[in-house]
Length: 471
Ligand SMILES: Cc1ncc(COP(=O)(O)O)c(C=O)c1O
Image (cartoon, rainbow, N blue to C red):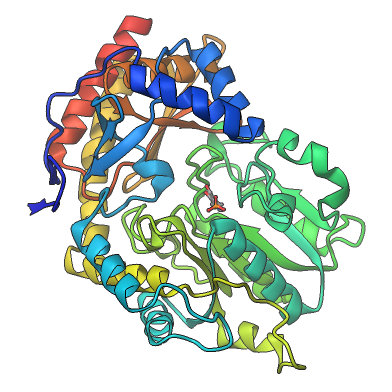
């Protein structure tokens, strides 16, 4: 067990007695300040959510974290089953990551991107390449997941010489304009900016077998979605014949923890190869052990031409990368004077130092195996819940420590309302979870990979209690 230098609890420790004061006076006070000074696009959403969920202390204001627990400014403790958007995979405030950050910041906080690389950036590019499967060996760094998606899309266009991209329904790739163009999670995210959204994107159905858009059932369906994808990229009248790239999440995250059949992804890879399409995997959510393997692609035995990384890459320092094969990345060509894709903070030395340490911890503590083992325990609990409440739970799905429970109403329709109410009850009882799915109908569990079995049991007892109270 590792003790944090200046924290009250231990990494990996079972959450101490969860206590949640309602409402938290310090949280309320700080949120009033925030409401005056933060862009209302963000604050208004919180207020709406508070109205909808009826949670007096939603949101809470985070102050510190340790392992799988969070403390708010009112001294309340929470079990974190979100890993803060699936980022804090190594546990909150991991002492070794902190030390790597401190050490690097003492030496150099900022480098000169593409002009004068730092030694730590060079070491990190090599370590990432060693960590990734296949020939994924050349990186472009960014600060957010969306940055990585932009860099991957540009690399694919440089390689194929074609600008149309095929993406998938319910996909989420980020909020910058290029990433938003290929996302299809919610139309409302794009509508106000429609003139700035790339038009050369086609969205194909993702194999969301639980609600198959073809009204078929796997495996008897013969993978109609794959056939349709092939039709889209090959039929002269389907509008995507001239596509140069395909971007997809090997397991959809925000779209609702959707795991496609293995043959589907294998088939997509084959079609891309046959048609000279650059295949991009967005593993920003699924990478770095989230699904029980280093990368979700390993469940399918498929390697893309480019992969997007972020979130669990550093466990908290804003850092991302698009990593491609030498063949694809060489298509950027030689410079005509200035780099045509770069950024001020490209390969920030602190991010690289934390990323390097994260890889070391990942290997040493075998976090992929831990994700598998804890994920199986979590899955058993969620299946138990489904057995107890078969009318409310349509499906339990996911891999490793990325699990989702699809809630349904009496007609079997997506039940986003119940999911929100459940989230609210859980928050009041000291457990943080998030919804996913385009209707918010999937209760999602993505704890830090260092979560303990006792913490899963604790969370489950609270989940059961909360659901029982609601129905
Ligand atoms: C699969 C996927 N891609 C891209 C992004 C965007 O990452 P960021 O919010 O860091 O820009 C996310 C964020 O949730 C994601 O889940």
